[in-house]
Image (cartoon, rainbow, N blue to C red; front, side, top):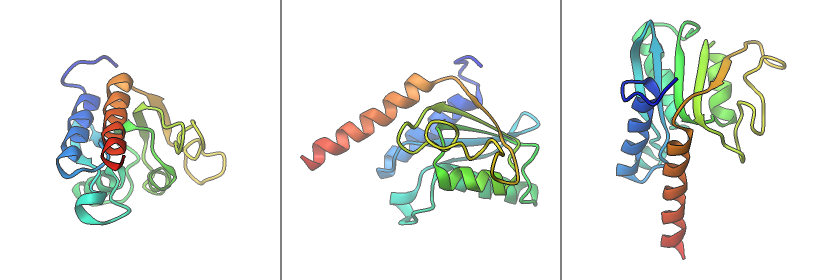
Length: 154
């Protein structure tokens, strides 16, 4: 995958930037089926006060509603940050077909960095996982966000 502006990962990064408007951690997620985007969301925990309002969870909900089914086995999610345990578990439960993520999460990643929940070794479904493009850009967006947050608290 390249950094073509029309790529799903670029669209996910646009969603991540939208999270900044309401001071949420800038993570964006896109779900694609048959080359069409069926869900596009960003983190909304601060906006909604909902601890489960991660971009991935919101995108899974929207995709299921769009398809009229909770089974997303023919779908690919593109997300700007490696999913956490909660989001990885939801992907398994949704039977997501494929995950492409940009930046590794060395503190809480559940797609191989810290945990490996998507490989099917323990759970009942395996999600095909790969690293996509824009890892540097996604990682820098997150670092800038947390750097600014730490400066406000200092």
